[in-house]
Amino acid sequence: MTTRVFVVDDHDVIRRGIAALVAAEDDLELVGEAATVAEALAWVPRAQPQVAVLDVRLPDGNGVELCRELQSQLPELRCLMLTSFDDHDALMDAIMAGAAGFVLKGVVSEELVTAIRTAGAGESLLSPKKTEAMLAWLRREQAQADPLRELTARERQVLELIGEGLTNREIAGRMFLAEKTIKNYVSQMLAKLAMRHRSEAAVLATELRLDRDSRGKR
Image (cartoon, one colour):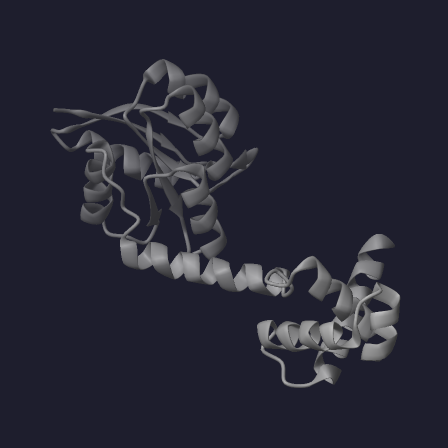
């Protein structure tokens, strides 16, 4: 079986090098080249490749978006994302776009050919170890983006009122709840935020409020 391959890269030397590498293999067939997203969208559907090697960064867009668009038109197409550095953001985007793999431009010729063959066979180059590392990184990023993700709506409200400097009794009056109930909310909230003192929660609430205010002024 021959695997049909299309190469998309705006750097002539790199694109032609990959094209020559593909053309030299008996079981791989080069069916086209492109240097931009526009060219790829015009020619890839006509060429009907089984594997598309896509540069992550292109002059009129990026390979991840191109991957997503091409796969919507050609569901059987397998995309290999090609980049010059180990970029976690690009890897995450590639996973979300459904790419078969993520290959660094610094890999030796044999590794790239193997990657193309693997993708052509319908297998993924995203090893469990690398995917898990990526997902762990993503979870850390999400935690930093939303430190309150585990709090209930009530606990978030209590946190905001603590940030305003209110005591448990004052918060209870504001929320029309028993003071004991507020104490329970505070304890649960501190545990979820991995905090020991109420003052830490007050600082966090203030920081979050200032962040919201600054974004609202942009």
